[in-house]
Amino acid sequence: MSPVLLYLSFLLFALGVLVVLTKRDAIVVLLGIELILSAAILNAIHFNQQFPDRMDGQLFALFIIVIAVCEAVVGMSIIIRVYRYYHTAVPDQINELNER
Image 1: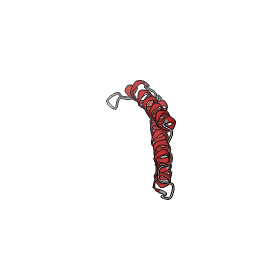
Image 2: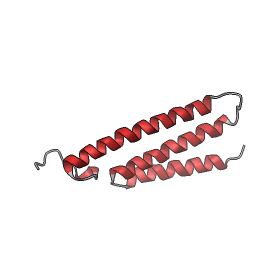
Image 3: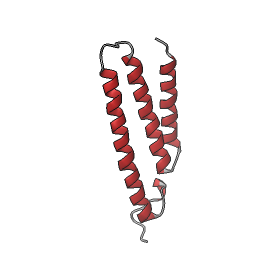
């Protein structure tokens, strides 16, 4: 087993966490979450290579992909709705107490 995929997975996860913690735009935060989910998929596939006769890792990867798609659709629809109402996509600038 080559640990290169584990290092790549760690790099993707760390980059995703860094993006989520540092960026302020909601769309970029969603992209960071997608990087974290991609790291989880890469781990599931890598650890599935240890037991090639079982399909657990591939099923987990497929499940994570479905969750990522649902997260992207719901997240983008919320961002579009918030942008239409508040005219900004930066979560820190949204304040419910301000009147339009």
